Length: 107
Image (tube, rainbow, N blue to C red):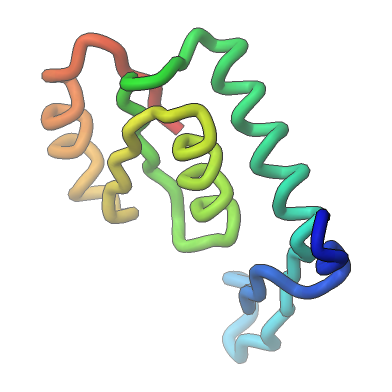
């Protein structure tokens, strides 16, 4: 990190265990250095799968920090991303809407 902020918290999320009734929140933090590494790793994985600038990436994930990482990875390589609401009812409509694109990758 050029400005020396690699150890500062860039993304903070609170996760709860779905198996427990009372949610003890489990904080999940990414520093700028960790966030940059995770974004670069996913961007490289998308490139190795053939995703390139202008392609459409459909992101169908729960509301977790990794969703932000996926959006940033798409932006890094210049791919268009479409984020769908995470529910069982929205999945078929999201896939139908995204099938109109010739180059598509789903996460």
